[in-house]
Image (tube, rainbow, N blue to C red; front, side, top):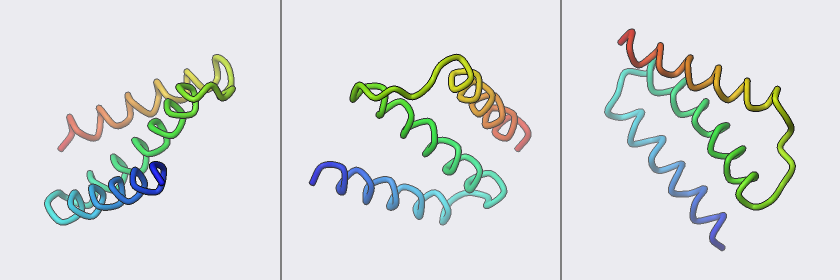
Length: 72
């Protein structure tokens, strides 16, 4: 039940963000952060999420989001 509620809360936040922000910023931000939250949650739950390549991918994603936010 908790994963379902978290998913629905994320969907609600996504739609609220779409309604109040520029689409060119909101969509990449929400999609990339969903990936990072999924990976971090999996790690917290003890799943093997990969090695250095996954960490590098998360870092590049965060840097890309930071560039999008800084550019707007």
